[in-house]
Image (cartoon, rainbow, N blue to C red; front, side, top):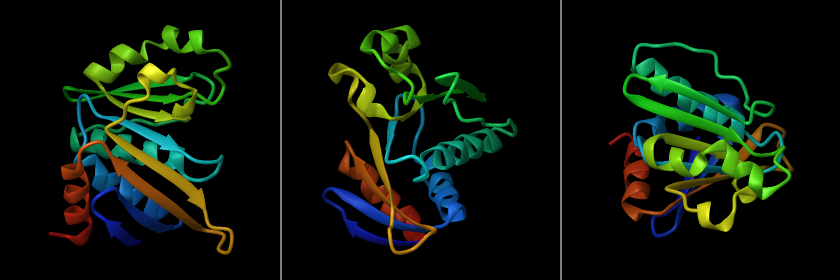
Length: 168
């Protein structure tokens, strides 16, 4: 996993395969908790679900638990409990109308859980506030190379991630 860092706005990670996507998720899992909202964007197959699954499993493992973490593509929302931490994983790809979002209760979940949201662009504007935003893309020249641009609402979080990545 290699990275390029501009601490003022983002960190760019080059992820060479699913294992490095999972490793980034495990590292980020050490920095997020209740009230954090992670937006996961990018095309199908870019690593959003792999990242979410790995982060959730890292949180569960830290609590001494194991649970399968399926994609919420058809259920829309999956919830998990890792000790006292509640985790909400939503995949909004299949949402067609804004009123369907209200039925999911995401506005309340943003306040009391750790939320991972795939396809957040489907959210109404008033819910488009994130703590972390990861934009995944696929590199055209290399089959397994994914790029993750990590943006944060609080620049201190970016410094924390950079320090964690560098092994400090």
